[in-house]
Picture (tube, rainbow, N blue to C red):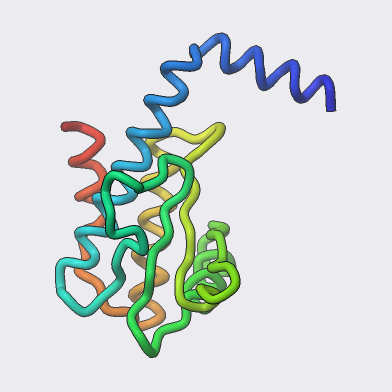
Length: 142
């Protein structure tokens, strides 16, 4: 445990804490851009947090429309694409899934996650507007 802590602190010092926090913010904004794009058809997935000022740079929760199971989307992402998504907790179980954007994560990793989610949404018949990955890329290059 101490070796892991020491190595984690070394990596943070190497990147700088400010750069780590900026990276987490940048990745979170890209995820939210993808979800907002997916929601563009009006009846699909949406951001669970509707207040932009309260949005987390740690994790983004995505709410599925009525009649669709977030756990099925999560299972498809895991089984077909080897991507693990967080579950909805308590009252949100089966209604939301979560994408984390903390830790040892970079732009290509988050784009791969978003592509896997978009394919899992399609395979499960969840309404969404295709092109969320491109929206995330636009966010990352703006």
